[in-house]
Image 1 (cartoon, helix red, strand yellow):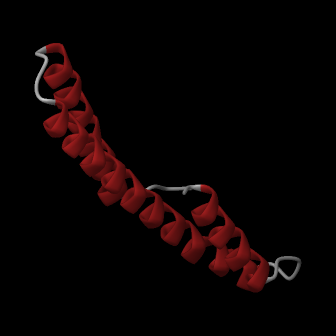
Image 2 (cartoon, one colour; image 1 turned 180 degrees about the vertical axis):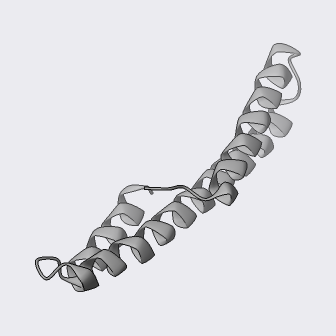
Length: 87
């Protein structure tokens, strides 16, 4: 599957945030600030998961329409299951 530039960019931003949190911890910054940043990272990852699943869903439904052995409903259920597992 091809991943969009948007999803790759989001993860690169998360990578930068994570490095920032590690630096904060090494500098012994306040716990509240570290937890706030970790929560922001978690939110960014959750949104990226949603983006990747939705992009995958569109691609898979198109394939299902072309392939008589694949049912679009099954593809959609699988995508929903991926989202549920990610939480």
